[in-house]
Length: 260
Image (cartoon, rainbow, N blue to C red; front, side, top):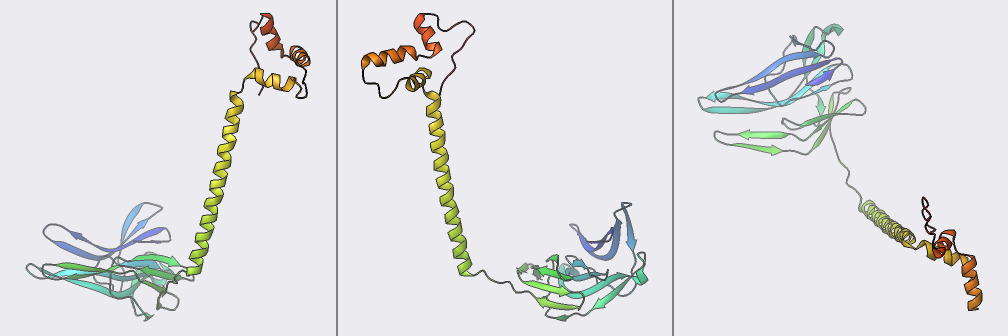
């Protein structure tokens, strides 16, 4: 399935039950505006029935169908699988969206080996990216699959395949990344310790006695004479502390105001 303008174009597939199976090569369109299905009947020789093929839209407005897998019964209890590597182009005939035509394509370049179920994505410069896939080897009583992780590009404007090459990361880049990570971890540790110390200091301030704070600010540190010290304490007591000394502390409706 592929999105084409305001439609979803569906091709092929298969249905399998406990008794039999069937592969398809018909084409359907789902209109995204009216939410209705319609069957297309393209002219020309199209692909054989298959599933697992990949579809992509070309810059010219056509739909490319490549690869796939199908099987058919050759004996009573024996099936034969086929891995497809052919390519077809489905496009509107004369610009009409209700009339389509099939065209067989023979692109040049290095094309992928026969496979099905690979991933497709649109790349820059009107190229289609093909990745991975599987190649099934089916015998009388066994089925083995080979999975791929290679990369190919198809250029629709030049009708040519290109083999993709992935660059490996340089070892120096990895070392630099590791150094940056270590520096960031050190900074996080320092910030965490600073936040912890700040929180501890704030907790100590909250637990200090209000009377202790008031006395500490009222008594001069240079006072050495006990008489002078006592006079300073009596004249500089907080109002709440004086009331407590006189027996009228605290007054009704009044609470102590902590001094931190």
